[in-house]
Length: 325
Image 1 (cartoon, helix red, strand yellow):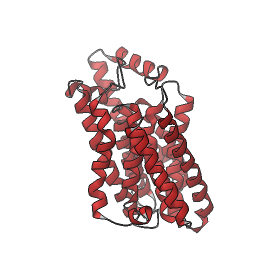
Image 2 (cartoon, one colour):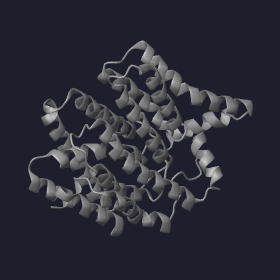
Image 3 (cartoon, rainbow, N blue to C red):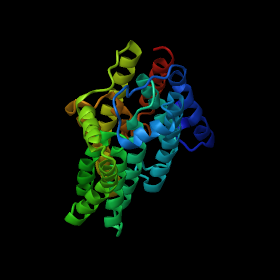
């Protein structure tokens, strides 16, 4: 009955979402830890550190706010494009639940800021479909990816996602690709020019080299953490298989949107395994497509009792991770 209640439209659910995320993030504020250490960061995150005086409580507060905003924005995105075939507030609740996994990181990371910006790139990419302003939208997507990479270096690899997404939508043409690349390079051009003007270009290139080669996060796994990661991975697999099984029943636009989300998720997976400097912080980025994949499964799967059991188990594993780890 819990899932049946939550997958509807309830204003109280949206009111409780910020409190759920705050409850899960309490340990982050009690024992704040710098996830970036002494390694220099990309310019925009470094600017955030300077503005906040490297105060971890303030940075974590920004991170909490971004997660809350992201939860609400994910509901809005489905309302605009209805790719889950039902207007539901469940994505906000699921994001709040799986955001508990971010406390394993014990704080905020530049990748969370990048994830928030990349969400708007997804929004823009969806709106490219059947839109006459493909060039301006492509430029905007590239610009957003460029800004995200100035917070978190490996977000730059989402230009690969940009190209694959254009291919999925049927707009993989030279002018759209060039517009995206131009948008991507625009903020980077200004940052490089700034460093060049103030003789800081060697520092900037050294920062990039260190971020590529050094994994900043080394975590010791716990039993509850393993349970959570394992169960969440299991849910992603069965939800993806369910999506593949019912894809022919969907509108063409919904198929394309879910393919774009799947590619977005796979980019994060490939980054984790292929680049030495990329680590578990990619969870901040991966929770965006994972939220939609799980929401689609829980809203539309036909075996109600299975959904109730799995959904309850997801909540239980999140609580164990947050409060008993």
